[in-house]
Length: 479
Image (tube, rainbow, N blue to C red; front, side, top):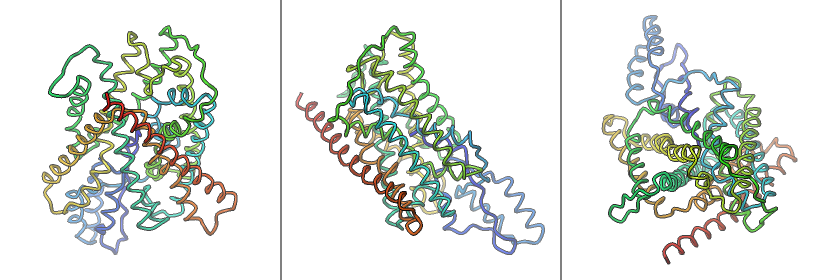
């Protein structure tokens, strides 16, 4: 879920109306454009547009353009440059979106599922690459569709939009809870031996609270382009974690001599959620598609990106399982020898990653909130409302993370309950509905099989992870 780098780096130019029409955008167009994820945090480059409007005005065209431009500036409407994303740029962005929190748990998942479960990991990677391809086909079929919610609306009307929106926000919320749990767990190791107890909070809980409070002011920034570097930082942190684990094997003196069990079938439902979460990123793929100069290459981008990420996950999974065996933690960084420099680097990278996510991941909530506020409301008042609501949500996430500090169970539940729908079930269902009259039978059968497998995997995974989570909570309270 390093999701918003491409969205911050790209935006589209507002379509100019014909010379005989009014240049002021229709209110519904303004609302639609401002809802797009990819336009998050990008301020209007109004200088060029203003000069164009002035030129039109001087040539005798409507004088309403400057007034409408002023209204657009006040409302925060973003100018939309023509798509110019290259193939390489799209691959880098898609890989960056996919690599994230899920990679921490792949060694744990492989150890608990057995080495044969790598076929499940690779299979899910292939299925998610295919579903990404389907999203691109849906976007090509309807140029008016700009994001994941639009595809849902195109396929199933308003109900499709509501369901897609609900799942999107659920995934973001639950993923941020997992990020905060990871922040808490890794801070406890970084500051091991430090006693900062206050009120009823333990040292690790207090440190996590302080870290969240440090990140809290970023939610008050309305112009997220000023913190767009955080997205790049999150990608670099994820890659750094992989490098440090490899460094443990090479320089840490830890022998990779543990045997991985062939298959532990009873753990497959739980680890399937961990695997599917690792490939979550489909909610922003439509934005990546619309940012490409040549969208016809989107399928190739998906194949290359998912291949690279699957190879990375598989390598990390086997490396971690062979290094630490049954003792491997659900977060690989917590299993690394604590006296090594590479371990300290990995721990800090894991700590800093969630702090780069909060403001960027909250952007969709903020955009949706602003759509409900009166346009005549003062910018300062809008900022206060936005910041207050964001702060309350982040503090709620902190409370949940501290109350349910079971990373692997929460992450598995997120994957099974939400991500499997967004990554596999919905794209197949959207495509099947949109292309129902022309879809070929083999493709129809494949989509129906993936939908059925996704539903079963989600159901059994949700039951398994929920049961494990409740058992962990019961044990914690009974002690």
